[in-house]
Length: 393
Image (cartoon, rainbow, N blue to C red):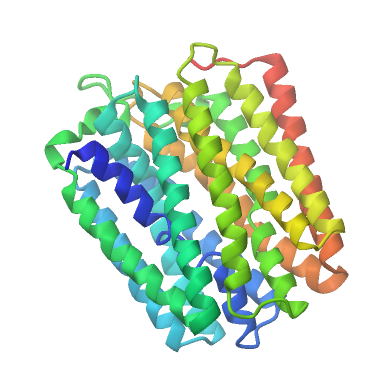
């Protein structure tokens, strides 16, 4: 099997691994007596601790030639602490496990972007990222379908087994990627033997704007799905994780279509499509929050998750591509990507606390409306920037 195909299948299987339990965490912890606020604090603290290492990990990805080895270590660590969390469900160990998973996840994002760029090059990068995202969402939908079936019959414990198995297959396809097919200079955006100073990342206003926009996106988006699952648990709809799996299947299925569509659009030379697509991310996110706030039926849940697919599907494709174009020939593409991801991650970390505390103190309606308003702020920032200047290269 070629490295190109191995990369796609690696994305398929690793999608279910890199976030640990992901949205199932809230359901799992609530079944063991933890409240929404405590769950939100765990996710926020874990994410904030990991963010300290975002830029150093990005620099490491740019410098190291052992990307595959480090990715393998991260996958093994995630599988280990997730499995142990099933047996040790108290607050302290769960916090340790989630910090470990978050540290691995914050390294894996630039690492996967780097090996993709190193294999296909800049000209084919947008198309390959779109394919990666499509396979990643397909893998998440596949594992969610398995989780849906097995959670109904065997409970939420079966999800831990599925996550471990997906991790094993991830390691197999990672091994099948040939080291000789990865151009490490191209992977970092290095031009010949010349590497610019790291400060070039912080001097690029476009990178800063993109980071601020992603902060708003993840602050609004990150805790919406966990809130859906927790609300279902509180209403007595589901305590097995099957409902959470159903929401994931819907969202990931729509993300596959959106990612492939983006791949076709971004092959054109009309780079202003990036501005339009980013705007659609926030419009969809705002609608998602409003619908989730006022409707709790199954039909509304379907609409909410399709809108999730629009936002996450688009941002997952265009974010690494924009950074790669803006920082090409700097030698710091992955450090810049990590910087943008760090700002987005801060928003995602705070989303758990904001959404969880709002839900516990004022109810789910105000929690969703608050998150939707944050999306509106992100849209305004992006529109103002796009109107003044949108330059890709």
